[in-house]
Figure 1 (cartoon, rainbow, N blue to C red):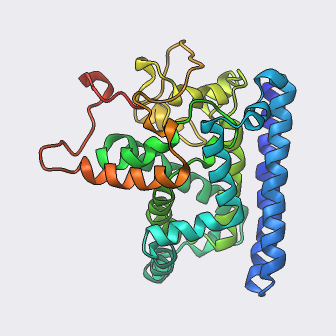
Figure 2 (cartoon, rainbow, N blue to C red):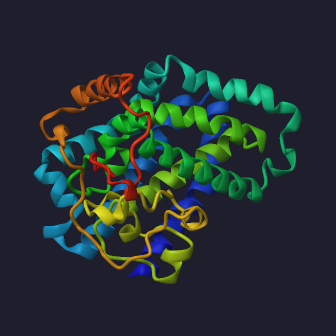
Length: 321
């Protein structure tokens, strides 16, 4: 079964590489309506494919599809944020929350990096590999910062507040968090000369893989899941309520960064209970949750508060993950 899931993930990446450039080309040629409808169709198709696989492995009673039908508060947040993302409202919301920085930053980065761009990677399959590695590496450190900095954690906590995995949990991200990542990744992407179609291909590949990482299937991929690609159980550790799992497994797709920088969880404990302590999001809707995150982020920046959260081994009182 692990091999099957790896094959599905590989197929999703292949589709992203082969289809997305054509979609972007259609945008460039002003065929916007066709692009948008096709892109949304692909994303919806990927969702149903992953939900079907999840249900086939876990059975109906434990499946993500059943959780979505039950529509608990946690599932409602997941589905709402996925719907916002797939409809294109997520990009609009990120632009609004960042005061247009998600639109401006990539353009500025392209202009500044022009003289030092690695043009040989453009239009070559190595461009996809390079962009994949760069974006994954930037995400690793960005993710660590979200957990370490108190004000950033107040935004990222919204994602970790999910009490069950629905496959759509990966889309449960504060719009401002998405906006900051777009700005953060703009400059390294521009420096290595990643064209827009390649960047979009990587983004869709990440989104598809991220969906299966938020599944409750008990697959660890064996050696591959330990030393190469994150498995569902590997990422579940990152969401675990266990104290020993805190501040581990920050990688998005590749496990190499966690091994290199000492955040890989090497233990055997597996926990199926996910979430955070003091989960006030259980009684909120996505709109109030977004506003609440902003207010709380300013509140923790009061002078008497430390700017960083205690590490795992420092006896932290705010056990969040």
